[in-house]
Image (cartoon, rainbow, N blue to C red; front, side, top):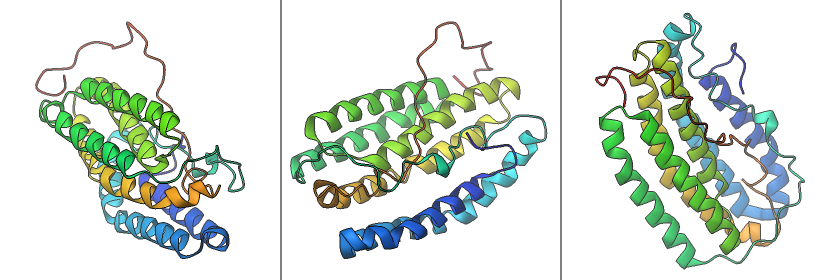
Length: 237
């Protein structure tokens, strides 16, 4: 995970720098399709920088108290696979799979509304973990990958898990910021899937665009009895 001296803005800038460095390599093998996908991803990351700076400013209040919000949840871009890593054999693009994934994201968005309104970070984590598990199985069955979508879900899950812990440590004061970040990530899920689908023809050719460019943020094994004391109901469920 990212060190305490770092920030969400620094994380985004690292991602932009990596994508800029890797883009010429992917263009040599994937042509304009690769250039377009990475350019759109870079554009989205740059557009997110002002929001990242606002979140970082809000997080500093809690970081000064020893609560590493917007630090502990992030992964180092240096943990991404090597660009030349061999990827598993991928199927040709399939419109039926694309539609099914879009339906999954639509359903997930609907399921998030109530726990977000209730500040229920535990349920957000569980709903996200459930979708993540289903997508992992769907990827294996269809041999079609959605690495950017998976990465955003993993990030969202991390913010929910850590947000609950940080909420306990701050008597719920940090929960609104955690929810704000979660909602921000949920808003980019459709774009993430759109870019993943555009990369499928490259994956079918053995080009690891997106698959080899994102650090994993694994969901931990569920542990019973590790919830900690309950938060006030007005703050989080």
